[in-house]
Image 1 (tube, rainbow, N blue to C red):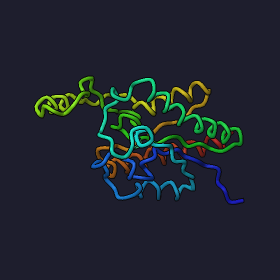
Image 2: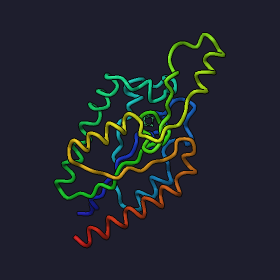
Image 3: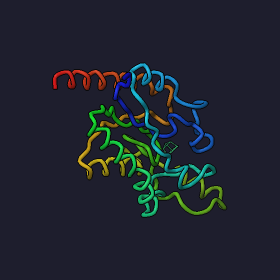
Image 4: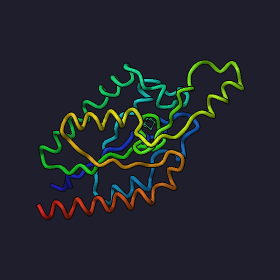
Length: 197
Ligand code: SF4
């Protein structure tokens, strides 16, 4: 049997850029260097669902976290993540190594270390000046987006833990070398931990 029993979970758009808000895509299909690195490491990839695509569709505007922080959106994230929690538990019980989760910093949903926020983002676009004023009030917050926040809390509820990593939405290609270095260090630490145990 050739399977290496190593798995990582990826934010949906790492493998499918087409799910992103129109205009945000910094690559044509998938983040090739990251995917290539993971394949070289014999690490299989599970693609998480894209909550924005599922709930808001392909023609959505860009949102901030505050706009998505309402009961139905959170409950929908939970429903999308339930199967992931079940799978993680099943793989763990069968001695697979789960390398972690890679999110998208800057995203209102999939940010890990950083998300976008504004309490002013709502309403219509009829007054151009007023709209620009609202747009200017967007700021970065050092906290996870809604989806990753739910994921982390569901993992805690299930007494499961996983390391979280991230690609930077504003410079996906530029953020890859640092991410790959971080993943390589984490993988080799996990490797030596499993050799010890
Ligand atoms: S960051 Fe998350 S919500 Fe946004 S496109 Fe990627 S997978 Fe979808």
